[in-house]
Structures are given as C-alpha cells and as structure tokens.
Length: 202
Image (cartoon, rainbow, N blue to C red; front, side, top):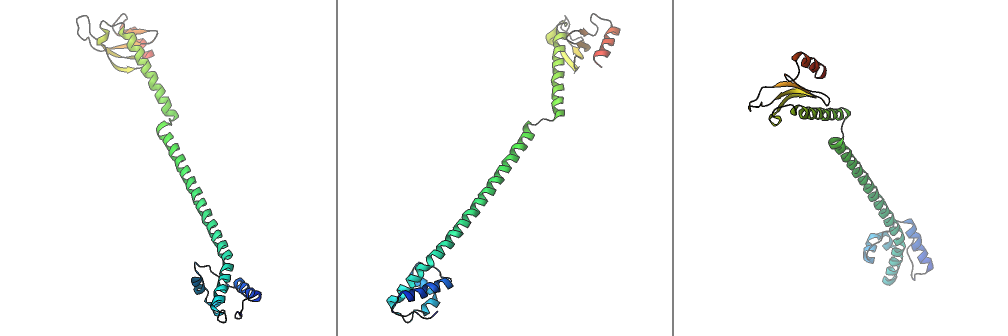
C-alpha cells in the first residue's frame, strides 16, 4: 500500500479500509498503544500532519473493533459452551455416584436374600413352637414358675421343675403341641411316650 496523502479524503480513507481488510489489525485501549501494535501502518502516515495521523489511526482503530469484538464473542461463546459441558458431565457423575450409593445402601441394609428370608421365617416358626410348648407344659407342672426349659426343638424338649417340697426333680422330656401335651413319667407309660416322641420330635 502506498503512503497516505494529505489532506485525508474519501480516496485516502478507502486506502485505509483496504489496508484493514488485508492485515490483521488489533484493538488497543489507547491510540498510542494502537500505534505501537501497528508499526507498518505508521510508516504510511509520514506524509500526514500530526492531526491527520491521529485521525487516520482512529479510523483504522474503529475498523478493527468489529473483528476483535466478533472474535471475543466467539471465544466467550466457546468458553460458555465448555463450562456448560463440564457442568453437564459433573451433574451426570454426581447422579451416577448418588445412584450407586443408594443401590449399594439398599443391598447392604435392606436387601434380604431368599435363603435369609426363609431362615428368618423358620426361626420365627421355631420360636412360636417353643412358646406354645412352654405354655402347655407349664400347665401340667406342680410349680410352673420354677420351670427350666432346655434343648428345645419345636414342640419338644427337656424341662426341670420343683415338686411340692420345693426341690427340683431333674430334667425330663416333654411334648407340647397345640393338641397334645405329655411329660415323661406323668400319666403315660414310657413305651407310649417314646413312641409319640419318635413321631413328633425326630
């Protein structure tokens, strides 16, 4: 580009516009800073008065604003897009971790396997049978409050209680179902008791 001529007119301004379109022109906070950033353009101003040089620099500086602004907006939009993506990925990670903790907590504290469920049901049934047997057997004892139940297995087990003299008589076997209550050595011979014991308790 040839040097600018004085006075500045439309032809000279056209030269400046042409220069701005061919070169990368940077914006600056002050005209002096802008002049330092664009040394090639300053060479083209040597034939102009100081006032016209400033005028030409301002004109070129104004031409550079849209390009810089467009670039800044583009960079800003790019940064915002990156931030949104990072935020989205972060939320996804937090959601997955929360879900993992909830599922893990459920299996750790609340989940019960089928085998464990059956075991607990059998345990409850066993305790119920023990309770029924203790109640029914205690009704046949001289001193029901002294009864000591041992080796309980469903409706069957061993019991030791006090007699009329307040002494423990020793542990004997018992059978205490909802329909039948027997105590070894009471109201039934040993052979019959053993037969019922083998059917109910083994």
